[in-house]
Length: 317
Image (cartoon, rainbow, N blue to C red; front, side, top):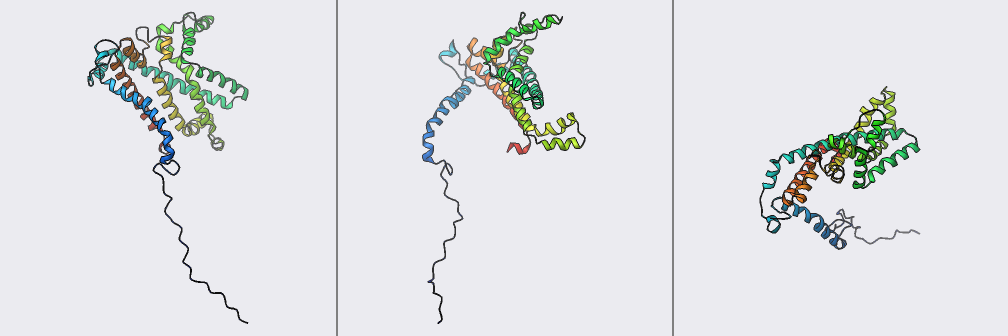
């Protein structure tokens, strides 16, 4: 008995899988317009309290707005007059030079070198010693700026701890707050800000593979050669990032210097933030003070571009 295979009716071929991607929402796969609606109040607050003051500050920089006098009642548009007055003011250029000295000494050199040294030492130190030193350094960093300013003022004052130490070893007392105030506030900023650089470099060192050091040691490289040829190149992105962040933070330091010296004596420690404060609030020239603030912002932007040039191309993407 012969059996015949059942005949199958002609069926339409299965639909080919669509190669077109799923339809995306206007704001992406997950963030749709409906889901973005609850975020509208947050965006409005950001515009009102961040973008709004920025736009108003730019506007003020081109007016003669003042706290008192004619500019307080009816501010007029003066164009680039505030910037011209700044570029022709000797006190402004004195503040620019002192700002650069303060930034280079305390941030570019001081905080970065001290942070690197501490990170290298703590990497090889006993766990207990590492924890204690880290806690002490971070304690200086988390202190409020006003508290740190008063502490360091008493340290550098004629009757302070510094003179007690140096006179105990037979050296003459010093009055750095009067003879070299910009150096005193630079050391204060190093003491307070080194913790950030230490944490950045400690994290970067922990990410360096150990076999790289082993290969360098087998090739006969000593500790210094390993640091120069292996550690520094691998830490280049972290160094450039830390330089940029510490520079921007130091450019805006105000409270520490204001508490320790007030910008004096005779403007010997008056950096741009203190000069801006003096012009805007002591003399009441809000327009001129805001123009100085924009110039300080421009200096920070130029410094950031310089540091970004130090980053490898693959880290810029």
